[in-house]
Each structure stands twice: as C-alpha cells, then as structure tokens.
Image (cartoon, rainbow, N blue to C red; front, side, top):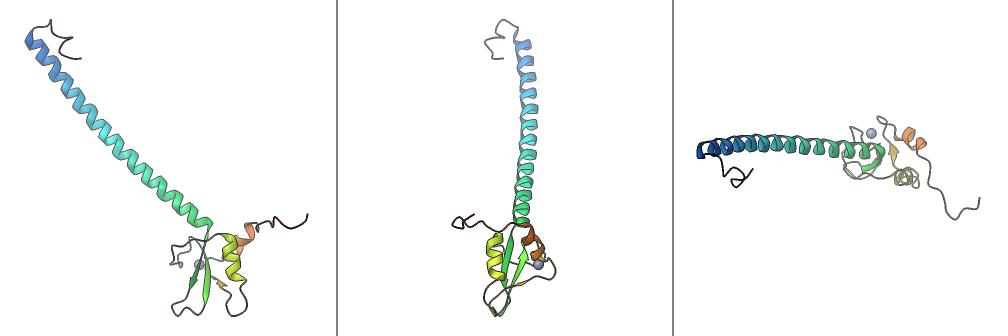
Length: 128
Ligand SMILES: [Zn+2]
C-alpha cells in the first residue's frame, strides 16, 4: 500500500499502517533470504551428488610413483588418486595395451566386474 491509498486516514493511523507494513516487509525479506540460503545449499548438495554419481560410472587409469606400471580403478575407488575420469572404452584400452604396458585392474575395487556390465562400443563399420 502506498501513502496515496492511505491519504484520507489520520496521520497517526497512516504512520501505524506503514510501520506495520515495514515490519511485514522485513519479515518477508528475512524469509526470502533464508529460503535462498537453503536453496543454494540444496543446489550445491545436488551438484556434488551428480559429480559423485558421474565419477562412480567412470574409471581412472593411474601410473605408480615411478611411472612404470599402470592401474585401472573404478572412478569412486578409495585408492584412486586421480581426478581424471575416463570412460569404459578408455579403461579397456589401458587394460589391453601390449605386454609390459598393459594396466592391471585394481584388486580392491575390481573394475573388471564393472567393465563387464558396460557394453563395448559398437563398431559402425562392422557388418551385421
Ligand atoms: Zn581401485
């Protein structure tokens, strides 16, 4: 309500009306700030959940400290240290490199079981 709408009221009533309106607006602003804070927190949690889920679907291929051997982990393996998540075809390629260069599957997270569930890519040039 603007002052024009309450202009015919006595000044004391107009003052009380606008003081009440201000109290309500401040209460409403506090509610909106709390709601926005909660929604931002929910959005951050949802984003984090999506990232964890995405990571859990992928794999990591990591070299040991000396860079001599490679290990394939599931993306969410606690022993994986790399943030670079690769897809199943890349993990399979690392496991099937020529002898001596092939990555080994992590014995803790067993990525082979997950790779069996992910169908290999279809070859668009293969005849049916
Ligand atoms: Zn692992």
